[in-house]
Length: 256
Image (cartoon, rainbow, N blue to C red; front, side):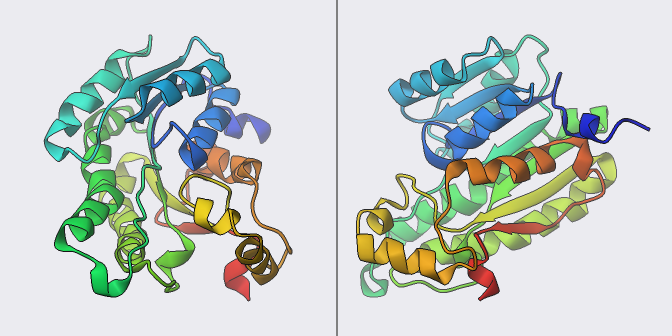
């Protein structure tokens, strides 16, 4: 039986991280790399991706510039990801790309609804599935989705986003039911309030930021490093008997 700490090592493992040009996706790519994994960062903005890869500073870090919202391009994007690392195999996918347009319920359009549900809910399934045959043949795989406080709670001006993140929780369970028997564990992190581009409206208003912090049991909002332990746990062999689960990393926000 391997030593306990060895179960958290990711040496010789490779991960694709979407939404990795900023925020939670970028942070998670960095955590995985620091634990020894190869990482391919995927996002639309090349300048930010280059900066992220340079910050990781590893010869096992690469990037793909892509618009994941173009679903017909997902097979070719996945193929690019597989070709960029020396070992040529992908062991896990982190689906961190996301969109929140923050529209009033009376102004939500069909187009904005479809755009949000496509990127936040459809893409995590169809993109992850591109890597399943290889993970299945290796009897090892990890899918980490990103849920939200809005997976279980309704916030103003967030109806499409909340619907997509509620869907992510059930998608994660359904992925687990379909793929876990082949060694592919599928779980989701549900972050609280963390300072990212997506939450800029919260953190740019001191009163709103303070109220969010006061709602937690710990008494503060999240810092990106708070996601490191949960990321490595779900990515590593340590989570081999855990699948279909949603882990709230929210300082106890949902406990109150």
